[in-house]
Length: 263
Image (cartoon, rainbow, N blue to C red):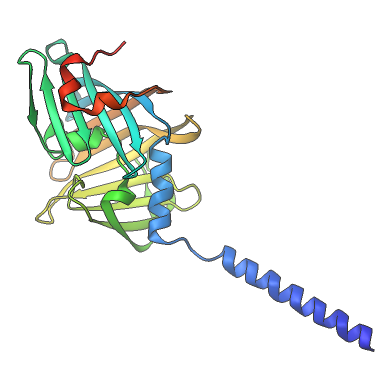
């Protein structure tokens, strides 16, 4: 009798522990956890280099192109990335540089041998601004809020179950005042993002696709950016040649820009 009671008590404890574990596993992630997980998919943690090809389309016809090489390194003190971007094409722009270090962004023209302050919002080509080609941690720049759970379509009209997050700028480093982003629940892959101006106007919509395993994670290799007013204006950003790199701290100093050379 006593043994039977003990067995029943043990079984009750195990059942309670099991149900508690299931409940814990079913607990949805916080907004901060979702955006941090998506950041790790978007950005390698190790210093790296990636090539970007940007093509501007107007009504389906290629209008302009820019090729860039991005060198990025995570600053352990701020958990934000420092970036050095070098233009490789077209020929008239080859060798020009963009530097992002902390909240400071500089544009260097070797022909003029001068660097000037610029902003992340300045247009680079088509619908892409300087901020769109830089490596950034959204978890650092924005305060996230889960707005809901939704099924959304990607650029190929495929449906995904996602977390819908609303991101409000939290620092002066943020390229946009507000973002809405949809993160796939099963994988934490970014599917779609809307970008808003300081006045609250929708500027553009970006779709992320063609995921490939690169530097330890499945990352989007193509971003389609559509103008919010005229959907015939589209910019495609293709990422390739991801690789680890010995990125030097000296590269992120404004004074070093005239001496930088990419081997």
